[in-house]
Image (cartoon, helix red, strand yellow):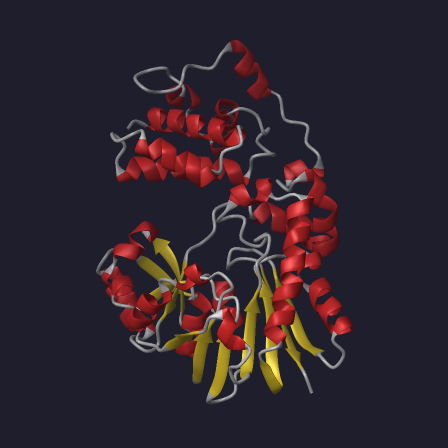
Length: 386
């Protein structure tokens, strides 16, 4: 596909999304109907679509064609070449489209920062004087990070192994064993380093959350909302502990045994019905379901699909998850509440409400990490019961 044809394909996908389709579904449908598109073509179209979705409102929130025109203008691309009408390229710009591009958009603060209008007051309340900077950061692409599996390799060995597949990395300055990918991130899952368990894909903020959790030697650790098990794997690698994983939706854990075997660690999966009679844990890590507002660079579609009702439902789920996780903490143990959100209503407000309803629990410390060049937004709160 030519660059113009890729832009035309992105326009078609964006029109489907603007019509209500989920981004991944629209991209999958396009790929299935475009057998001529190679892997590089699919990657390029996906990049165009996600680049637009990250900045949809500041690009005018119009049709797919209008959005791609404004993205091209913002990026300094050759609009005439991309919209040439040659072959499968989109048609040339009309006089009206040329005139429209020449006029700067008049945008609200929320639109300029690419935050839904209804969410902007809560965004400002939650982030204060960092609200604008954090939002604008999420208009760009997120970096890709790896965790070196200390059971199998040193940072130097993992770096060398990745280089064999032309994947460039640099060490993350404040997180031991964390690498930021600088070249060829799409090759990671087919690289020997990944397939043999030397590295795992995991954002720096997630790695820091696990590493900064106070875990006593020989502790029993439960990853209560384990999902795919990434943090359970990190606990087993980083801490001298016996690790268990649980999720209310057990199908999310289906790949964890394979991942644990590849990493060379042991993780015991516990179904919900087994928790009540199971011995309590020294550390329970509760990574609750959330809006993902700290990770919207990776899932920009989620930002625009979120609404007040969905957020309220998530807050109810978070309160239930924290209460459920607390039941598995041993006397004197540690409970960590975490989300990949930056919204106070999903974070400190949930914890404070829990402590009010459950006297005796105390906040030891909490930390709100904002999305930046060094990783996603992430919240953690360490609690103890005397």
